[in-house]
Every structure is written in C-alpha cells, then in structure tokens.
Image (cartoon, rainbow, N blue to C red; front, side, top):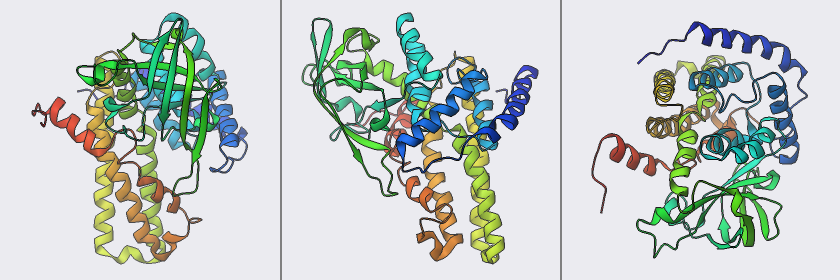
Amino acid sequence: MDLTYTEQEEAFRAGLREWLATALPKLPPAPSPRNWPARRAYDTGWQRMLFDAGYGQVHWDASPTQRLIFLEETEKAGAPYVGANFVGLLHAGPTIAGEGTPEQRERWLPPVLRGEEVWCQGFSEPDAGSDLASLRTRAWRDGDHYVVRGSKIWTSHAEVADWCELLVRTTPVSEAVPKHRGITWLALPMDAPGVTVRPLRTLAGSTEFAEVFLDDVRVPVANRVGEQDDGWRVTMVTLSYERGTAFVGEVVACRRVLGKIAREARANGRWDDVALRRRLGRLAAEFSALWRLTQGNVSEAQRSGGVPGVGGSVFKLRYSHARQELYDAAAQVLGAGALDLERPWALERLSSLSYTIAAGTSQIQQNIVAERILGLPKGR
C-alpha cells in the first residue's frame, strides 16, 4: 500500500495552500451556529468561492487522494467546513455522480457545486434508524409520479434544504425478500405540497436536525436514482462515502484540538497529572493511527475506482469513540469550566455524544466489520 504523494498531488496541495492564504481573509465573520438560515448563506457563499477558484468539484470529480489533500489542507487553514450543504457535497452529490443518469447529473450537480442548492438526508425513521431496511415510509406509482406517505427523523438541515435524498419503500416489508430489496432512492423537492418540517432542538441548543412529515407528496418518477426497489444498493454507495472520506477534515481538526488541550493543561497546572499526560499521549497515537487508516482507505478507493470500501466502517467505529474520549479529556483539563457552554470545547463535547449514533451506530459498524471483513456468520 502506497501512502506517499505523487509530484502532481503535491503540486495540487501547494496551489490549494496558496489560494487559501489569499481567499480566507476575504471571508466575513461566521454567523452563530444556532442561526441556520445565516449559516446556509455563509456556507454556500464559501462553496461559491471554491467553485469560482476551480475547487468546487473536488468532492466527486477528483481522485480520492486529491479529496484527502483538499480536506486536510482546508481544515489546517481554518477554512469553513461544508456545513449546511454537507449532504449535497459529501453524500447525495457523489451518489448522483456515480449512479444518476446524465440528465440527473446535469440537473442536480452544478447547483450544489455553485452553492445554489442545499440537500438534506431523509433516511432514518422513528422505528427504523440504524435498521434502515425496516423503513416504512411508503411510495406507490401513480402514472409519472410516486405518491409518498410517511415520516423521517434526524433529517440534517431540513429546514434550510431545497432537496432531500429520500429512501422510501416501494415494496412492502411483508412482500420484500429480503426486506432491503423493496427500497427506492428518490430526490424530493422540499417545497413540494405535503412536506412538513419540524426542527428538533439538540442538547447543545441548535436545530440542525428535524422531523419531516410526508402527506401524499407527489415526486416525479424522473427523480428516482437507480431502478425501483434498487435503492439499497444505491444507498450503500451513499454510506460508503459517508463512512469513508466524510470525516477526513474532522480527524485533522481533532489532532489540532488535542494540541490546544495539551497547551491548556500546561497553562492551568493540570499537566502535572501523570494519568492525564498518559491519556493525551494515547489520544495522540490514536489520531495518528486514524490518519494513517484514512490514507489507507483512500489508497484502496483509488485502486478500486473511487468508492471507499468497508474499511470506512473500521474508521467510523474507532473515530466515533476517539472523538468522545478527546472531549472527555478536554473536560478533565477544564474542570468545572467544562459546564460553561461558552468555554472552548464544551459544545463540542456535547455534540461528540452523537457520533457513536450518527452515520450508522457503533453496533452496526461492528456487524459490518464482523461480517464483511472478518467473515463471521450473521446472528440469528
């Protein structure tokens, strides 16, 4: 496995660094993380800057290694994350690029790249979260449309989204054998009649998630990506990106935060705690290993045509827990100050609690690793 960079890749890195040095000072101050309409405008404005500079397409029209370099360098430079449009750029976009028709790619990809349209993800349901094959939101064919009835939950950025990558059941669970074969992937316009969005407030006080209710919503058949009842396979493409390369920037961010935590411990006297120093040292080794694992996954994706493999589940499983441990260590350094949500890392600690659930629970990742990598039998 080759973890080195070619001359062309290093030239890409150098050009990106040079552009970031001139572009970032032009950005306005970031709005409050609790104001998602303002965040949408800020995040899509940044995406437009990337597009105009020739970097807008990097999430799907570039090699996996270039994506890795892009995410690494933008995070190191303190550039904005994809934010409100992470579903469009990191999930729906790559899926449409790989599975959509030429007409679908022409319709949906350019507006995402230019920062003009935002997507959300309509996968989880109240009774079908990690067990995605059990979803019950129904869709039935009526001429040139599907009629959709049901609800979704934990729909990221639904209140500011234009489109939703929506999973629906086109064959009832009772008739689909196995049950995942009755699922279809649709692109849902969020302004369609019958769509109701109710934001959900998180522990940290933000509303990036929402419930979405679908009351006989009509979706054109032309908005189907892949064949009817083939949505599970299409979804596995989406999730391979979500669990493969989508967390690259966050690993870089965690390594930077770890350095800040160590400096804070030295400043406030907690560095004298041998157990704390040992904990921070172990986390440094952990994130270093995760970065190498990321490079390995990207190298594998490069050889296999660009789609991350099941190694992304190994990464997601360990990264979720390492991130929680990182912010627990931050709380240990801050002491009572960790209860002050205005202090650095306090909100991040709260949000880290969701990482063992979001993008597939740790239990699901363990099953994937056991069955698809280790070849263990499925439980009965």
